[in-house]
Length: 356
Ligand code: UDP
Image (cartoon, rainbow, N blue to C red; front, side, top):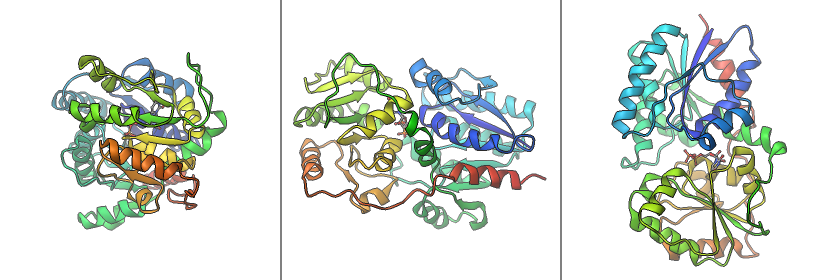
């Protein structure tokens, strides 16, 4: 059985690392063709993940990145269709919610090639997010929907998706965090890292494209009594430079770090401040309180149990959340929310069981 996997962006490389390893347990029965769309192309946003996480080398690199959503998605659909026609896979596998996900979903479903979606059913209910459009559309053409949480299953059922196409498998990022944590490593930085730092990431379009919001977030960070390490996404870096935004002395800007470095930074931080989906969950995996720079999250269970506080871009709300978590009375909630670390294995088994 042949599975054609489409990936293109940083979080997809990490998810694919877990699932591709599970596929290897079925060598001889399951083969995988990897297609990299080129959506993320800088070495520290792409290549490093393949090397470090031993992800098989993609057989195809479509080299499509840097355009608008419409340009990227359109060009990807055209190229992915060519690859699908040539490879004739039994299944197409897509991850998450990027333009690469949607392009893979459209190309595959129009060719009647069964489609599997990992991280199905997540919803922010904010249709202004490009990711929300990508998720909703992908879920509605997928044949196998691998949901990470019970909430995701509920969302899919409400939207009328056939129950027998949905499978609650847990979260493949949890699998990855368990597998790689022993290999985590301290990044080589030209700055000291003192214990008790806050780790921050900012890259969502809603925070970077409206410069006032980015400015307020930086002001909020500047007001915290903490050293802040901020590995900077290329999009955010470009916006800070373009608008000449000032970055306070307590904030250390870093280039994007590798996954093994990132999880070291997460494991050794006191608190995590982010607008990333994946980083919110990793904060929980490593038992760190998380402050989310958004007004809503797909990972609602983290907010419900008190491990995550949503603050939008408000400096006052950021400070309040920070002091709430830094209070000695705060106890990190002890729950298991994202499965048992065998999600990728379940996905591989399910796909294999669909062999004709
Ligand atoms: N990540 C990384 N290096 C960084 C920042 C993030 O390896 O400098 C990892 C992080 O640990 C997580 C994933 O990238 O596994 C999250 O990706 P991102 O925040 O880009 O996307 P999102 O999860 O919001 O879709």
